Image (tube, rainbow over all chains, first blue to last red):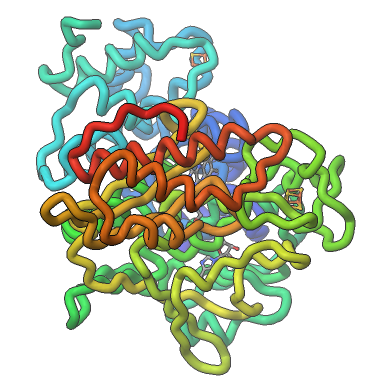
Length: 173
Length: 332
Ligand SMILES: Cc1cc2nc3c(=O)[nH]c(=O)nc-3n(C[C@H](O)[C@H](O)[C@H](O)COP(=O)(O)OP(=O)(O)OC[C@H]3O[C@@H](n4cnc5c(N)ncnc54)[C@H](O)[C@@H]3O)c2cc1C
Ligand code: SF4
Ligand code: FES
Ligand code: FES
């Protein structure tokens, strides 16, 4: 058994040292997923595994045997952008673009966590099953994705617009 | 990374069978893979133990049994954890990033290694934890993040986990399997102080497998929380953190659990402060006395004197929050 990448069955590398990130980029030439720090600190390498966001740089490819990996290439393409990709364009959610694939994969995983009721560091009421989709929540939940260009405001606007009315820019900001 | 072989263990027995002198268990890999890439860890075999129990079940007594392979996110989102042990859910979501918490397991989080920069700098620094007897570059180096309690002349590193601070406060028990059978040990006894063997983070022996963590029923934990003070508001290790549970009746502290993070080589159960609090009025003055009692033994380093005051203020603030008592802050 191999690993499924964007719906296609892919063979696992013989060498267990190969990270999932290197398998994607160097083995499969899916260069959308980026290598920023290669040590878990930046989020540029974020991909989805069975819908959950993880860091592919800290993952050995062999650990993900039989699992289904989605990269930015699997979310949308030039002809059919993912709604988040479109929103990033409209809100200037990037400058150099290096962090963008990780931001978008992360946001897709993030909204599932929020809807499932996973608490965050800023969730006031832990007992609540429905967590408000507020800007504070979104910001905290996206804090694992750094942007060296400082495009965070655009990134937040794009995510807020894509995922619902409650998240519109608060009056105080 | 040095070459290694990879095996997946279906259950605890298989994992223990695979463990040799040269093997390491692999959880999410978020710490071990990083350390292997830096060639600080060089196992010949990785035994993937994420196939072990990932279940969270209620025990007969009303506690919780948490499988070693439960992911950090799954533990923080569990309804019983949120209602009965809120400090644990809060501690977990204060740590790392959502992506890392989706990968990290309970056992891996417990056994993560220090983030001391000299420990990581294999090429350029001396470190007794990495190479026993070589010396410690942190003691006279940049030691802002380092320990103020329980350190030794051979190592001043801190344990970086947030989750563990809550486990220390909650009187958790660790279930361990090895070739010799199964045993249980109090979580508080798992991690060591560095003494003259800082290469040993815990009392576990090679081949010991953590299979579960058990939380006892603890009514007062329903009123508990975790506060982390750090250099940025998210995705940073603790300078100081406090896990606390408090029970107050008629203005008197009837029971309390208190533990500190970011201050020592192990998650630090603040027993002295607990003792100083029981039976006392739930007032800022009493909280300050208790905090001062715990920090009296502090031996700060060149760059981290601030932690002594910071730890006390954070204790007072957290106890104030739990007691519903307004605290003014300020010096102890
Ligand atoms: C950028 C970054 C920021 C971080 N910030 C924080 C933070 O703010 N707070 C915090 O608490 N943590 C933080 N972390 C650390 C993170 O929480 C740990 O890396 C994670 O919890 C480790 O879990 P794992 O399952 O991935 O462990 P692994 O990396 O798989 O393993 C860690 C250790 O545990 C051993 N092990 C694993 N399972 C078992 C078992 N069942 N029995 C015996 N031994 C076992 C392994 O052999 C290894 O020695 C951060 C990490 C990164 C990369
Ligand atoms: S403090 Fe401990 S981990 Fe850091 S350099 Fe000194 S011996 Fe190594
Ligand atoms: S490349 Fe993976 S987190 Fe930076
Ligand atoms: S757009 Fe350049 S790093 Fe984010």
